[in-house]
Image (cartoon, rainbow, N blue to C red):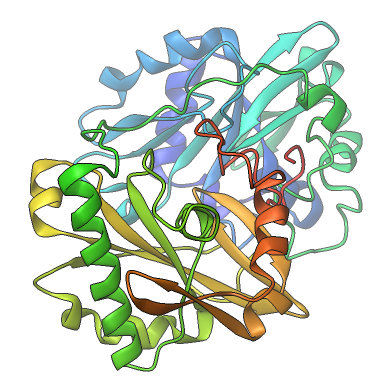
Length: 394
């Protein structure tokens, strides 16, 4: 079998080094699915997925010297916020050296899977997953490009366990919603939570004193630019909660949240220079099929705080209509709700100005926060929010 994507220098180098160091590995996820189902790698899946037993994590990370001077290893932070695996880095990526990740071309994505009783467990992005251990205790081999490459044993059953009807192509399949290996809700509820792990630490602030006054001015300026350009908006998330419940911003917050219909994303990006010099505008893109657009959100960052590393900014999230619902992505969480909250907007008076909010705002807040009338500084919108669409969350 000849597979072009497994005939690249980066894969051949990885294959050679893993074997020389006696680190077991196997083809995984989208790469495995494409090869078993179609005898080729999925054209929409440009990277190569491998699995490695978790006990080899430290040994694997020491391979970077052997991958030099052309490649490096980048550990991937655990976004699950749960103590599911004994490691804060559930994945690692092999990619070109001295090149930013998004420009690095083909990458090798390694998932570390840990034996726990009769299961193998792992974290995939935000999702906790598991399958029966027999798939990895003894591996099978297939010959590709004159290389013997491991695959899980009972591979077709493994693919059924992950993908269900795996022989049928499903381009809208989402790993955090459709993967049958996602841990059930009852088990998830018993997993202790852990603090969010950040790539870098910005100075923590609260909306008090000078920061409170500054954030009010920043929000009103952002609204002024949006209204001037006829771009619909509404207050959202914690900003909406604070202003509806308390008549003001949440003091323990550090940012402001607003939303814009997804069809206005391109227009907003074109007028981004109108926010300067009050804000720098930074866009966040997505390739997820969860939303029918490429813009996830934009951050409006004041220059002084951006330079000094203070995490004070305004988020503008894009919400896309999908059927009778709205889809969006916040903090890597896939979220949705009925469109009725945003098809027609209400207003609320704040700082002497009428500002836009979702219709049926109290119902919308109940959907998001449950008992929204009771302040909860420890509420985590990436785990506890009722609009999360992914399995394993409330």
